Length: 190
Image 1 (cartoon, rainbow, N blue to C red):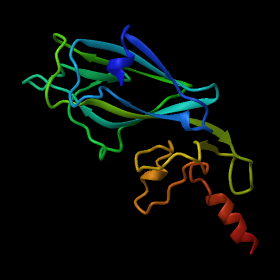
Image 2 (image 1 turned 90 degrees about the vertical axis):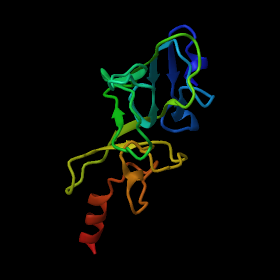
Image 3 (image 1 turned 45 degrees about the vertical axis):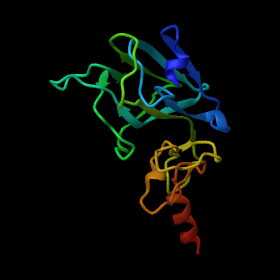
Image 4 (image 1 turned 180 degrees about the vertical axis):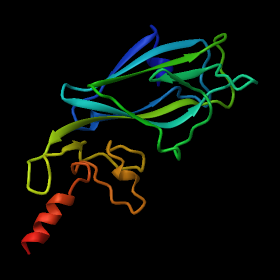
């Protein structure tokens, strides 16, 4: 919970490599039903070298001014978000280019709690990219791996959107679902 972790204005959330249960974390603004005011927090989520981080938005729920401008917000890649986003908005995810990703969480006003606003909920996942062996059918594509114990909950835990497949064909821990060239080669040999 960011309200508890961010007492000095910043926090680093380390994720383990992509082979263990600490490779993913669910971050909430608060433990209570409503977030507190007067909080400013710079959050860095880091993964080991050779990994990247995927930030998936599960919920954004901040108050906005009467004119629609954000009064309290979270900033991701220099864009402020305050209007309601729910888990169903699955296109709201961000991949880091390096082994960390940052966001900024800010609430204004005096230190009171607002009724009815939850703040934010993010899923953060460490992913490892591995180059596959080159075959005739492929040009050694990069495959994304996450820990095989991750529960594919339909919210991009795998980092490759395979767990968002409407037919439930998730590839968590299985290399990102890039099995097409291998299947074609086997069929070609038959």
